[in-house]
Length: 517
Image (cartoon, rainbow, N blue to C red; front, side, top):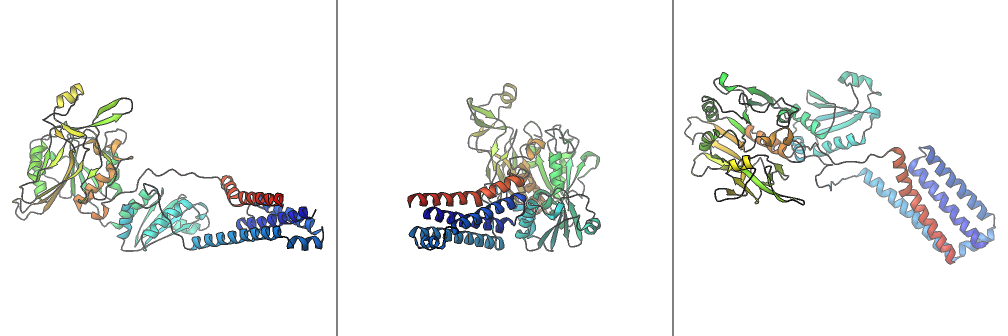
């Protein structure tokens, strides 16, 4: 009887202990919390009353037993453990730090976002209008911006509680972030890192650069959003970084317009008119910036234009051997690239793979040319080669490495810096060129996605116009998947991990102790 009553006493203490812990952690916020606390409190009180009803002598005897001392020590140790755990959680809340251990750093700002924020010269205010004034995911994102720069502040606002502020700023929908930078303001209605960083770039840039896209040679359309070979994604990516994009029909103008910061030759499939190439050469000698996307089947006429500037176009197609499961080696006409020049501004921050569908070799040929510095930016793998027998490749879908072919790695992109004075141009300025051996490299199908084509292309554009602060890895549109728990699921996980399992372990230990006594 004495042992049974002692067990009742311990059970009562444990039940009351967990009732107190549940009350402290949940504050009785839900009906389930209140039921859990009430059941444990009532059961604990009843157990203690049953124990005390056996008499004071039993209490004195029970307290003097060695097993009681051990049991009491266990309970006190558990209480101390929970107190320490609560204290550590409080300190972590007050002085928190986070570490992103994911391989793609999906919970951290991209290097480009960090660069943009580090270049702020004025305070940047981020005000998020969200339902109920709470959005943990958005708050975490804005907090990352604040941690990247001391000039960034943020707050979450409930537009229903502050309707006059929402009306003053013209907020029409939940999840709208208002950005304020000096006197300039902007709004983002779909607040992802990509959209927020693009908005900050637009706020902080004074003026914009113009990309002139040559037209009239059956190039893929920069307004084509549906076709895989269109360039609408390319146009959007440029506009997101404050570039203006316009088409230029060169034969009707007589010269490259003076407002063209960059001339983009993107996938021509028809020959240029006789007067067009000299106009492009004259533009380069005026200190122009040119970016060319040239496919193997077309634009061989650019060989003579680019040769004096240290860029050699191969009359070939780069082929790579890919191994397919159950099929063995097969020819690949979309080689992957993961070897980049580690020193050049365009590629030194690039670590991911890019894909170059239907690509020709583009190599640096600046040796012996004063005033020309050419750099091979990207190379295919060692298993690739530059196939020169194009008839066999396109007509019979056959290719094999021969003495006439160039063994990989094969360069497929070149950047050239030109000192025009050394090239014999009086009062000449510096000029820059970037040449890619594929027109499909930056089309709708391949610019976005899991590869880093977009970063490489936009880095090339930024280098051409001298915006070195934008040469980095941009926010990825593809983010890591997250699991969103309902309130009931979150509550179940909390009770199982924090209350139920520790309570069951204590009871199990108590039963083992009682049976051994």
